[in-house]
Image (cartoon, rainbow over all chains, first blue to last red; front, side, top):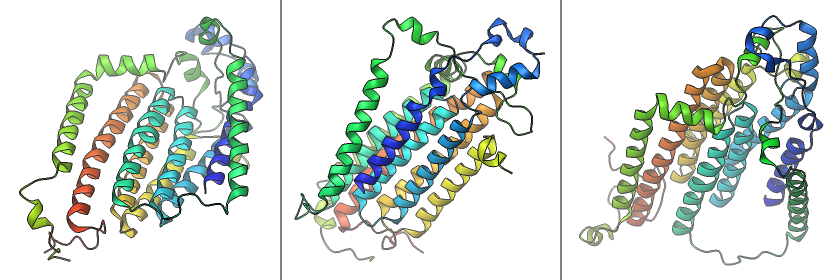
Length: 259
Length: 109
């Protein structure tokens, strides 16, 4: 299963990083202001849609690949007998979901998804599985050598691609920040993700860490602090639950009467 | 007809979230291992988050960022739930040497 997962990840990253639509700077008539571009002609919108990311076929292909990855990953999770395989499928599902969040311009939440879910919660699951399960007799299996070589090649390719993208980043951080973002322009049919007026009115950092942080610390400060209290209670409760109770251990060691 | 495949709308994300939620529900109902059940609950929470973020993207503006704050809080609460739930699973496994939720009938009837 590992070669399949890593090959799927490499494919996702290849699609995500390798599209030329990211590299093209989109023409930005909307930078003049929201009021000026509200009555923009339609052909300018279509020209932007040609260069944009979210409206093109690349975005649609990316969405379908991610949708199949999430659905397949979650089906993989609920059908596995081996718990570690289920956790690995869960990690892949969470990565694909993070990519979907990023497609919805929720960059900060995509990063949080990878850090908290794929990083922390899944590590917790793996720890619990390792505590509960007995160790295997054969930790190193030699029969799946071809799959391992394939997985190694896929991971190597992934590293080369990521390294290439990172190598191309300009030295000055200002150029990275000020790069024009591709915008999605499609209001020809109802249910479209964003109208041109909305796209013009959207600030450049919508969904970024800065914007979400402003929303959290300005309008939602009390829920934020309440969540910190919830986490504190969860930590204390987890410790209190998992601590072995000395006086109860003697009676709990016997066979279970209810089952 | 080809617009369904080529033009992304908010419905695509909503239907995908519904499918993931349904898979998580099936996992909760059908599986007997407590850890798989907890992972299915995480799947359902993620589907809800995807719905929230899709609507936030559809709405846009400052009100959409409120959806981002809500999704952030959902992730934090899910982390707390996973910590407490896994502690409970560890305790149950220590006392009964299995994690089969069909055999945990102490509170039944």
